[in-house]
Each structure stands twice: as structure tokens, then as C-alpha cells.
Length: 278
Image (tube, rainbow, N blue to C red; front, top):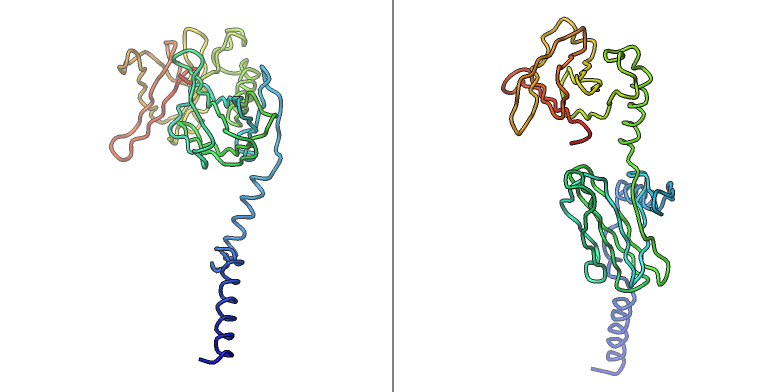
């Protein structure tokens, strides 16, 4: 082998080594498709949006749930308290960096309406990771950042569903003089009932006056058979007296929880009514 051949081979090896050393590992991956580019742009826009941040009670930093990805700033030797909605049951907590971030659960409030707190602690400043929290009601996607001195002591959320429920409560009170139960002052009517389940006759509104419960159905139910009502008491279904007046079912009982059922088998429709989210 002559010297020119040895030099050519050496140059080739050097060129291959240089390209391998300087080229990022993902440079040889295929380019992203148009949909992948659009998807990452949408995600980046959602994660990078500022959104609305307000001050809540006791110094909480309040985010509107679902508007943007909340960015929570924590600091070593301090704790960040992320408080979830009362009654919400946490199922899983997934953190991108489980080595340098520590997340511990805590609870507050009465047993039947406990609120879960996620206590977040970073090991050092300058960290960025993400956290996904799945619960009985929703899924939280949260970005975690660590700073040497600055941190958010308390974080909470405002929920669009709660705002809608409050507006419905206000509207119902304003209309109280046109619906059964108006013989009782509006401030004594309780509109704090939740309705869950799907049915063609799903109640539009439920309220009580302390002695009776009023279940208002869509107008289309008039002239049709009303669903069967079961009041849940002591873990058992009980039948209580009620009467229909147009599209209104008037129950002679102060209901905490009830079940409305119509049909059988695959065609069965069922709706659950709970007072105060119980």
C-alpha cells in the first residue's frame, strides 16, 4: 500500500468520524409530516399561551382549568401546594422527571368533601418538566419549573363547569316566581343539585324548598309516561310519594340522592340526582 492510499483512507475515516460526531442523533430521522408539524405547533401554542392568572383566597394563584397549560414555579427547600377541587379523587400522578422532582399527596376538609393537595418539591433550580394528574373528574396537564428563590406557595383552579352551574343557579333564582315552590321565598330555595346521566327526558333543573323536591323535565315529557323515581337512603332504593304537574315532578321528600329510570335492558335510560355534589 503506497503512501497516497494510506492518506486517502485516513482522510475518509476522519471525514466519517467528523460527520458522526457533529451530527445530532435525530438528524437522520425522517422529517415530520404536515400533520405532525401542525400538531406540535398547536401543542406549543397551548403550552406557551399566557392565559388568565388571578389571585384567589389565601394567596392562591388561580388558573382557569383547560384554558392553557399551567406553569407552576417551585424552589428548592420550599414546597408548592397544588390544590384540586373538593371531592375530586386522584387516580394517577405522572411526572416526567421523577428523579429531581418529588410529589406527595395531602388532604384537607371534611371526609365527605375532602380536597386533594399535591405537594411539589424540586431538588435544584433550573429544572423544567411536565406532570399529568388524572382524577375522577378530569385530567390536569401541568408544567413544572424550578427557580433558585421564586416560587408559588399555593395554586388552585377555577372550573368552567362551576361557573356555568353558578349562573344557572342565579337564573333559576331569578325565575323562582314562575315555577312550583315560589310560595317559599327565593332565598330559601336550594338549587344546589347535580344531574348526571343521559336520557331523552333528562331533567333540566332540580331544586328543593326543604320539604319537597322539584324535578323539572323538558316540555316534551308532557303526556308521556314519567320515569320511575327511586330515592337512595341508607344505601337502599326507596319509593316515595310524588305527583306530576305538566313537566314538573313534585316529590314529597327532601331528596339527597335519587335515581330516575325508564325502559329495560339495552334501552334502559338512567339519570342520577345528587344534592350538593354528594
